[in-house]
Image (cartoon, rainbow, N blue to C red):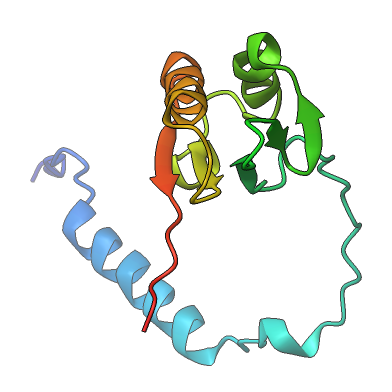
Length: 135
């Protein structure tokens, strides 16, 4: 009798069981791993000086009863008022940093107050007019 050759079957690897095994390993290491809290580590972060320009600034324009202009308590001439207000502005800043508060004496000339409002308008700022309520 003749011996028969065994028939060879093509080798086949099941990837379905490999993906199941990888998934189980991921779950095992996630559950068995030790998690640490970030607050337990004492880390000293470096300090950064952002400079004066990036700090929020309060911009105050004051008109006294004599018609004199002051920007943040610095006397300014009428022609230089717009440039002085623009100096205090931070480029591309939010509305809070582009807001100018206008303080005008109740006895100030209306023309002087108008000039201050016009200078703020030309400087492209948001304007708040300060008033005092009497009781």
